[in-house]
Image (cartoon, rainbow over all chains, first blue to last red; front, side, top):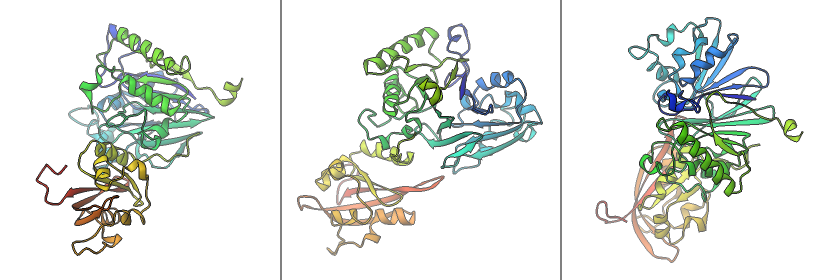
Length: 290
Length: 139
């Protein structure tokens, strides 16, 4: 699996000279599977660049949405393949007792918020609620599970060719819970992340910022570190950077994360910050062994 | 490789987190009726912390603390509010007498409601309210 981060920012796009390195686009991750097919995780503003980068229009593309907050769907109407009639796009997302995934997304892709309606998209687009059981897309096994955030929200795990990617960009597992002592089965999202080759996890707040954002659905640095340790993820990238955090502040946050990770016995390189446009090739077991 | 430990549904995780912060005695069962948690306030009422007891199967917890009706007779398992809530998917209420670990009897009002989600039932929650307690001053 190859993973490219097209948007790592949380909440709202934050372009500018102070966010150049970590990026200002909101959540979107491109995943190239072992057979060359591609998935997109979330459709924040980063998906616009993903669409532009596709050398040839894919015949079929799956977009897996964690939830429908604007920073995770805002790029949908600027995704070039959506305007290609030969492209089939399957959009997966959380079920809701209220209404269908299509109708919920159409609240955004409709007037007056959008110049086009869902029915006007030239591509062949369909919407599916994620099943509770594992399912397959190409060579990958996909698993979705509800995680602690505000509103119906999923985390994903993708297993392909012996490596695994866990994607939980918006997550507050420590809300009302002590992650260091709680039994594993009671920790939100842990099963998705367990021993993942790469974990992309919410790390929006510093520890000092978190008390003023309790219940907002995101993690502090300490919570993200605790979660990654409990999950025994091979490598963790902190994701969903706060829009107020500059590159300089994120450098400091990354330094602190790496220091604390190693003080707790973690391997060097086990934790870092997600950077927009960074590419990560997940090693297969054979590659690890060599 | 994913662990064989089965993750609890998020709705139960959030319910437990909330219950842990409450001073109202509260009990949580999963969709199969297994008692998977009760909070410190409930433990004080029963005279035994949940950590001492652990999870209890659906046919066992109903008799652990001897819920009795107003007539002093044991309440049939199927009529316990928590059982009604998880089996029938509707709220239920009853006046009960329970026996704590040291034999002390407590009169309580028990209210239970199901945890229903887009994917169906996840379980049920029951809260116990000491009979005759003032509004908002039960615990």
